[in-house]
Length: 436
Image (cartoon, rainbow, N blue to C red; front, side, top):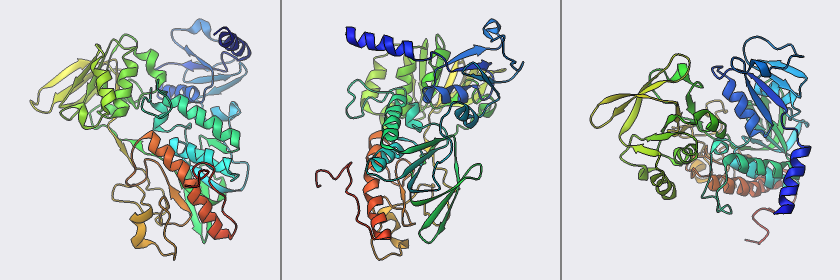
C-alpha cells in the first residue's frame, strides 16, 4: 500500500492539474459538449463561471466578455471553440497521416476500438475515425457491471480509455472530431471523404458507427436541450445534480446504470417508464440494486408530456398512461434514454440496410450477393465493407457483443485482403491462436 500511495503521489506531482480553463456559464448551449469532450479525452480542466467566479479569471489575458472561452496551457485563448479546434490546440490528432490504409474503421465505440486493437496488433495499417471522442454511447455509461473480467464494474469512460491506449500502443491511428461525409466505390478501391475535404483510400472499411439516441417527443424539449434536458448520462453531470430531484426517462440498462450512479449525488432519482415494469427491458442485477436504493423511485406507465423553465429546466409534466392524470413536478434535471435510432442515410446506396436503417450483413444479403464466394458473416452488400456493433441488423446491443464482433471482423478482413491481392492471409492473433 505504501508503494502504491507513493506512486500516486509521484504521478500527481508530475502531472499538470489543469491544462484547460473553460470560462463561461452553464446556460451556454455548448458548455456541456466542451466539458464532456475534455473529460472523455482525459484532459485536466477547470471550470470558471463567468458570473459567479469573476475573481478567478486570469488578469494577464484578453478574455471576451461573453460566450464560451477556453484557455489552453495558460497561453492560447479560444473563443467559442469547436471540439476539433480544441483538439488541435491540445495536440490531439485530427488529421490522417497517410493517404491510404489497409483498413479504415468508421466509429470509435467498443466494436470499433476492438477492431483497431486487433487489426493493428496483426500489422495492418489501421485508421479509426471518430466524430466525437472514442467510446460511443457505451463511453457515457457511469458503470458497466456485467462486463467480463471486472467484478467490481467499470465505467464506460475508463473502459474506452484503456482500449484507446491499447490500440495506440499497437500502432492504430486515432483521429477524433472528424466525420466521414461520403464513401465512393470504384472497383475494389474505396475512397472516404471527411468533413473539411480530406480524402483517404482504404483497402477495406469497417463500419462501427453505432446509433443515436431516440429523441423524446414532448413540448419544450428542444428549447431546453443541454440546459437541464440531456440525452445520455455523462459522469461529468454528477456535480451538477447534487442535492436535486432528477428524473430519468427509460427502462433499459443505460437508464438503470445512470440511476444508480446519480443516486450517490442527487437527493432523489425518479425513473419513468412507459411499460408496466423494468423487468421488460432491464437486466435483473440492475433491478435488484435499484430496489435496494432508498432514494430511487420507479414510476411505471408514466411519460413526459412537457418541460419548462426560463433559462434552465425547472419543471416537467408527466402523464399516467392508465389514468390520464397529468402531474406538474419540480425537476433539477431530465436524462433521456429511450432507445436508439440508426442514422445510415448518408451511406452510399450500394450498402443495403433494413427498413429501420440497420445495415445487413452475411446471410441477410444472400439475395443481392453477386460474387462466387459467400459473403463473410460481418460483410455488407459491398465486398470489403464490414459492419460491427449496434448499427448491424440483428446485433445484440451489449458492450461485450460489440467487442466480440470488432475482434472477430479482423479475421474476415484478412481473408478479404488475401483474396483481393493474392497474398497469404495473416492468422488472427485475437481469436485464432488456439487454432479454433
